[in-house]
Structures are given as C-alpha cells and as structure tokens.
Amino acid sequence: MFKYLATTALAVVLVCGTSFSALAADHEVKMLNKGANGKIMQFEPAFLKIAPGDSVTFVSVDKGHSSDSIKGMIPDGATPWKGKISQTIKVTFTKEGVYGYRCLPHYVLGMVGLIQVGDHPSNLDAAAKVKLPGAAQKAMQALLKKVK
Image (tube, rainbow, N blue to C red; front, side, top):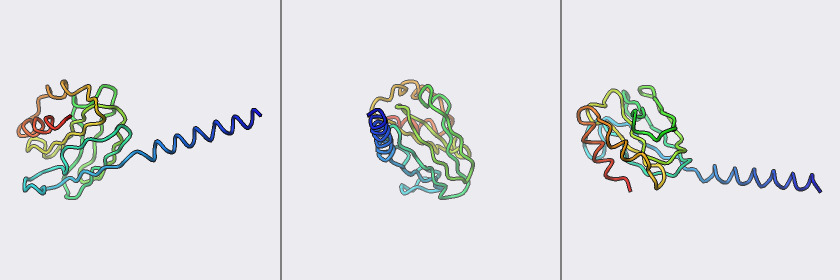
C-alpha cells in the first residue's frame, strides 16, 4: 500500500511540475538598428507584460547591441543579467515587478526597454526614481506609463 501511495504521489508531483513549466511562455525582443516606427537603436517590442516563469529571448538581429538589466530597476532579490554585444540571450523572470533594461552601447541614445512581470509590480515607484542618462530617461518614462 505504501509503495502505491508513494508512486502515486511522485506521479502527481511530476505531472504538476511538467504542466507548470509547459505553461511558461518564451517571448522575443529584437535588438535593432532601426525599429518599425523608424526610430534608430530600438528594442522591439520595447515593453512587454509577461507572467512569472516566462522567459524573454533578446535576439541580436543587428550587430552591436546587448541586453543588460539596469541597476535599481529590477525587483529586490531578482537576478540581474548582462548580455554580450551581438549575442542572443535568454532570461527567465520569476519575481513579479518591473525590469528595466538597456543596450549598453546605445544607452544614452535611448535604447532601453521595460518588462512587467505579473500584475503587481511592487518596485514600480523605485524604478521610476532611477535617473538614466541622455535620451534613455525620456524613453523609459514613456515605457513606465504603460505599466498596468
């Protein structure tokens, strides 16, 4: 009887674990020299709303771009990331909140993006207070207005 219960419990755990990971989505953000809107140095899309457990693949469509999290613009306890220039990088987001990111070579030109994970971005106020250089500040403020 114990073996049967243990086997059944293990099967339930495996099925549940598989179903939760199967529900996670992989989103794509392109790193571009010129976006569909005609602006230069763009992430496309620059704003995403995703679920906890989802991942985002930052695709190096045009050479010379990277994806790095911005200090102070990710939830407490979340893992920052730093991609290599001209390399595709995949990041999985497990904590709810907003995640600001940049292309390091084109940061001052306003090449920034924002990901909202879940419906309760507890770090929104803190992220909005981070000062960014050049055109990045204006671009990020527009993205922060999209958070719902």
